Image 1 (tube, rainbow, N blue to C red):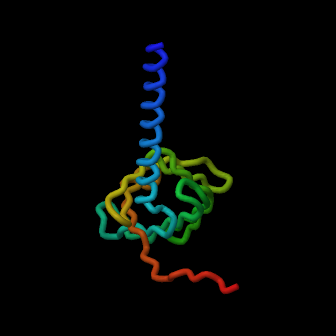
Image 2 (tube, rainbow, N blue to C red):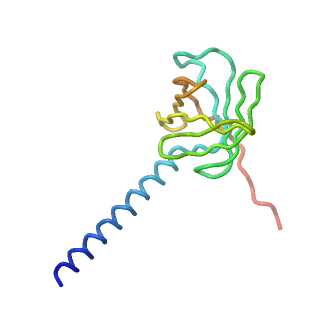
Image 3 (cartoon, helix red, strand yellow):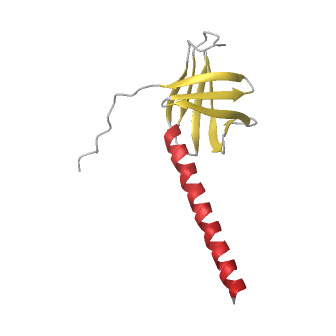
Length: 133
């Protein structure tokens, strides 16, 4: 009988830990606030001076994206898994980037073609209103 109580307590602790970890993960994802337009920080070290931006749409963990590198535009889908941001261009192979949060509205992306780049979220002063019925 006591073995069942110990096993039940163990399962309860594991479930509480899983729930707590999931809640902490979702809070981190919310603090990233990835959906929106991100511009390359021109003042950051290693910046090429070429205008680059990344516009992420969809939900907090995945959706479509548009990347602008100078005059070139790439479209595809993005996905956040752990601290890895995957960008998969339409008809191409997905590239994996390590994502870091430096503060509100500042992220770092490190991976192929985007080594140690820092992006700043573009402030948007447009407030969406509900449509009148």
